[in-house]
Each structure stands twice: as C-alpha cells, then as structure tokens.
Image 1 (spheres, one colour):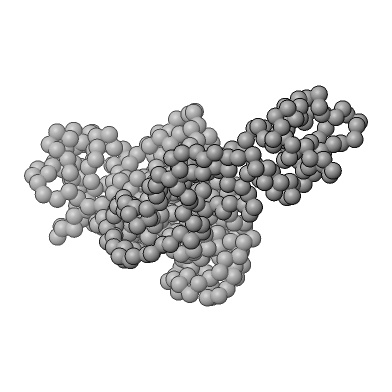
Image 2 (tube, rainbow, N blue to C red; image 1 turned 30 degrees about the horizontal axis):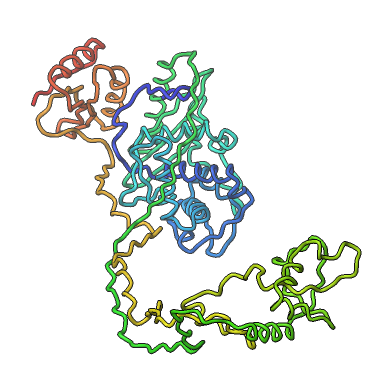
Length: 523
C-alpha cells in the first residue's frame, strides 16, 4: 500500500487468516508506546520477570525469574532481536497477565481497523485462535509509522543494547539489501512460515507491504523486494497525505441483572400484652356544667399566688404575652379582683400601667385575660399528668370516649414483593471463541474450476517466481485467482486457479501477449 494515503496497490489473499508469528510483536510494541504516551509507564520503569516469561522458547533475551529490567531494554529486545521473553514481560507488566494483555491487544486491533485479527499472546508463538492477515499487518505497520514517529527508528537498527546483552536485528539482511528499507518486523514459526512486514522510502514515496508464508528467508525477501518495486512503480509521485485518525477505543461496561426468587419468611405468631401505665384514664366529661362559687375562685387564686414568681411589667407590655405575675407584697388586688368587677376592669386599662422610668410594679392579671390553649385531649391528655396543686375549674362530660389506640387490633401490613432485583458489575463468563480455521499458506480452490497453466519448471522456486511476476504484471486480469504449484512427475507446474471461463480466457490471452506460455485449464 501507499503509506502516504493508505491506498492499496496490490493484494493477493490479503484477508486470508494466517499465523502472524513474531509480527505480533508490532502490536505489543504499539501497546507499550501507547502506555508511555499516556503516562502510565516510563521508559525507565522496571518490569518484573515472571517464571512464565522466562520460560518462553527462543528467540529470547535470556531473562531470569525475579529479575527486574527497564522497559527501554525490553522494547529494544522485542523490536530488534524479536525476543519472546521480553515481549511477554511487557505484556504482563502492562496488563498484569498475558491473557488480559492479549484481550487488550485485540481490542486495540479492532480500534485500528484490523478486522481479521485476534491475539492470544504477546510474542506470536503458535496458539489456537491467534491469527491475522497480510492486510491487517500492513495497516498496523502504517500505524506504527504515523502514530509513533518518535519510536519508529528502532525498527531500522541493526543492533541495540538490551541491558543484559547487545542484540542483533533479525531483519538486517533485508535492510542492507534493499534500497530505502527502514523497517519493520520479521516473524517465523513452523506453522506460519517466513513472514515480513517492511517499509521503504524512495524520494517522496513510501511503500508498506507484508508477505506471509514464505518458504525461506531468501524467498521471503525476494518476494518482498518485488512487491516494493511494483509499489514504487505504480504509486503516484504526488499524492495528498492522509494520516490515520486516532484509534476509537470504546469502553464497555456490562451490567448483568438476575431475578432471584426469595422465599418469604412468615413472621412468628406472638401475642404481646401492652399495658398503658403512664397515666390514669381521664375523668369522663360531665353532660352538665356545675356552678362555681366565689369562695372556690378565691381559694384557687390564693393557691396560684403562693407558687407565682414576681415579673416586672413595663409600659408597652401586654398582659396576654407575659407570665402570670405574683401578688405585690402587702396588697390584695388579685384577691379583690376575683370578687370586685370594677377593680378587674381598672387593672385591664392601659392607663393603669406605670410609665417608662418609673419603679416597676407587679400587677396581677385579671381572670378574664386570654386563656391559654386548651390541653390536648384523648390519648395525649392521658399521658400528661396534671400539675400539683392546680384547681379543677372544669368538670368533663361523663360520656365515655372510645379509645384511639388499638395495638392488638391493628391491621397487618401490606405484603411486600417477593421478587428482588440484584445488580452485578461482574460480566458473565465470555463465550468460548469461535472456531477459526488457520491455514499456513494460501491454497487452490479445489473442485471444478477454471484456471491457467504457465508451464512446467524444474524447481518449485522457479515456478513460484514466475507466478509472482505474472501476478504483479496482470493483477487486473487475474482478479482473485489463487496461485498454486503442482508437483507432477514431469516437473513443477505453475497454475492460477479459482477463475471462471471468461476470466481464464482473458488472463491467458494477456499472458500470451507477453510471449509467456499459457494454457487454459478447464473443469
């Protein structure tokens, strides 16, 4: 692809899910660079080496369990030497465990637009469900160049200091042999073959390409050189640069709600005897009012005078707003007011009060002053004892009142709902990943189909080279045809298969026009 715009130039089997091998470390390093830029870690942060990380098979840096090593050295070892133990330490240090880190890698891949990629570890060793495609790896290589230009130069180093040792680049041969090459990453396992994502710049052009499933290092580098040459030949000199947008990471929070049926516990049937002993039953109110004599009033007033406290009264005070004043020593106005209406009226007049600055004089309130609010009736009155020595000026009715408190006969409370909704923030167990068929290399479509044959060759490599050269020259005519080398008794036959009759005839006609042997293969 043209790295400047992301425009695809040539693709064959670009979306076939294959083992990426150590190309996985490109995502491990992308996650490390992201954590550094976010301030989560620093280059001098020391990561602990676990026994799991130290036990990873070669290629490795040789880390020991319990050892602490700076992140800068781990990045150099993973990028330059492709050390499996260093990549695992990075994953465990950033996420706490390698499985959690692999989930984060997959989420980041989706955010970058890598639709056919799933990770199971941080180093790329063969694992079930660990796959990617040539298109996705080229996308990731372009992201590393544009998203982290300050760290991209590490992929062009021929050697680096990894703290415990100086390591050499696994991509040194291609970097030295191809003009303008400056990265990015190699990979190899038996299941994956020889893989390479490379980037090269010539003039104003930059091309990024990916080869998966090479048969050897030399074969892989040769195919990569042909791809890059084709890209430089077809890419325009001037093109509008379109930088990739920032990854859109979406944090999902699952809330699982379950309905739990809870058996309702029946309350124990107990009987409580409650006895109100705070006060006696109030006296029944009489139906008639008794006649109150002056002698009874005089006696009541005398008792009130004995308990009263003198309160000075000044001009402007109101009798109804002040406490009951005590009788002035040596006078009998309060007693006289009880039986002399004229004295009572004289005491109520404002002009009878002292002027400001005069000596305060205690004046007894008249009997017809505003009465206090009546005491509460019913159950509240039953709980308030009468003050000692107070006169009973009113006789209540003798009609019985119905009790307002019936604790034993109170209705039962409404039955509560027996359904309880519980909320949990713990997600349900994730479903097992779908079964994904992993193939090591692209193969023919099989069955009845049309195709073209380019002839017989003495070696498999010679047949593969002619197929690659033809695919680059006639990519438009071949369409989605698959290349296949058939090992026959007469030699290695180079074929393009998986076409319909019309496509096969058109492709063979264009190939023949280039003075190349071509024969149509029918179903």
